[in-house]
Image (cartoon, rainbow, N blue to C red):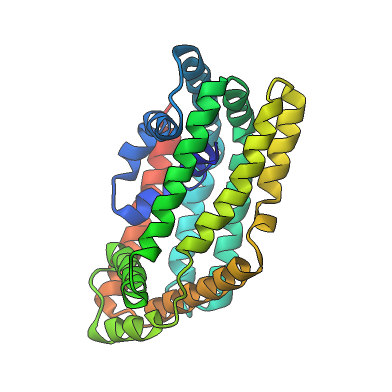
Length: 282
């Protein structure tokens, strides 16, 4: 059920980068999470009621405790990222996001474990099948593409993300991105392999799901040790690609035109306001 954690823990970043209305998505988060969970395993009415109650409890906490922090942080980011941005500052940003993500994980643990504990044998089989289907799709996205296509796709995703906040890329920015995209290393197949290793231990853990304490302890351990499942190759490539992403982001931020800079600041202000308004809702 990493899908539940991922749905909640990274939903804000995903929504922002996708250009969707963050307020609309956030206010419908319980529905969005249920849809994504049901893509992996179909819950019965009792399980859905349990999940809904847990999500309502979580959303109340998140709206009250985290959204004000996001709003304040976005204001700080706006000045940091337009005033001599550097790779170190971006690393600090991702460190802070990781801290918040871990807090979300802790809060979601009762919901995740509770749902897992209530799965039938048929549902566990369904979960295993759907997870593997997702892994195959992830791997095929790289397997069926050339290295040039993979690197172009990566560059396109970065271009779209930057454009949503600051507007169209300049000719110089496009040329820089095209040049740096040649350094991106495909990782889709490696991520699928990592997921299979992690999921195999999850499925083993589910064989003792009747013991709630053992399930809770085991699942927490799987989450905390997930990077140990990466393997040497994925760890190295992931680190290199993350460094590349930060370097490209720093270049974009440091070389924004006056128009892009103004739009970026406005986008950050709008985002902070969205967080404040969401936090103020009951």
